[in-house]
Length: 226
Image 1 (cartoon, rainbow, N blue to C red):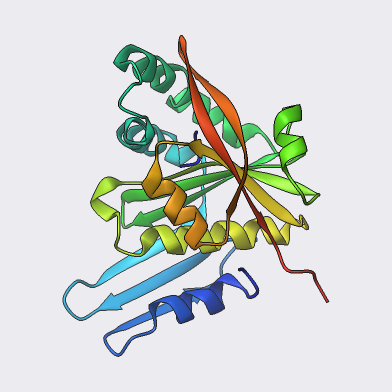
Image 2 (cartoon, rainbow, N blue to C red; image 1 turned 180 degrees about the vertical axis):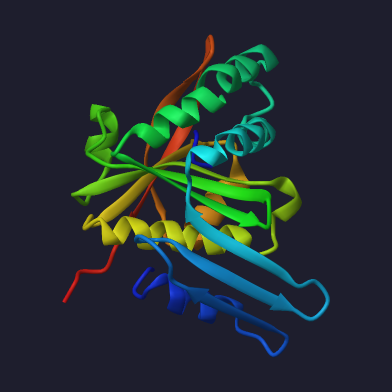
């Protein structure tokens, strides 16, 4: 539940998706794979967006954003105490610091100045869950474990920018596919993922405190490299 046709690079996709007479988007590379500066210049609302890999300096901001966004991904049937427990144990600054120390995990942040707008996390390796493995069609794969956007920025294009950078980062790791799990009642998230090339391939469960939630498994397969 945490994560709530690609044939070209993220830079090309950015220009294609946001091309209009009134808006320009550029992606200027700096640093490792999947990082870059996004300068989005609009006539009425100019902002400067940065997508870069998270560092230890980001853990407090990541935890704050996670505490806002995670409850929005939970179905109405989820118990508040289970949500609070998950935030305290799995989305704390300490937990994000542990993620950053793990070489098999990649966290990307999308920021507007000092404000964190969205983040994603990729986890290397094959899924440990046998049910997930049997649902997937393409290997090697990588998990899109977390993908969250501040609610103030839903529907404004920033989620697409981060998704494109995240998929580019995954592709540069040499995998053939990306998979994720998202709650089966989170229809907005499912539509977003399907819009970006993911398809439903199975179901799994997600333990939230004392409760068990039902997730869709979605998979995106990259085009074969020539």
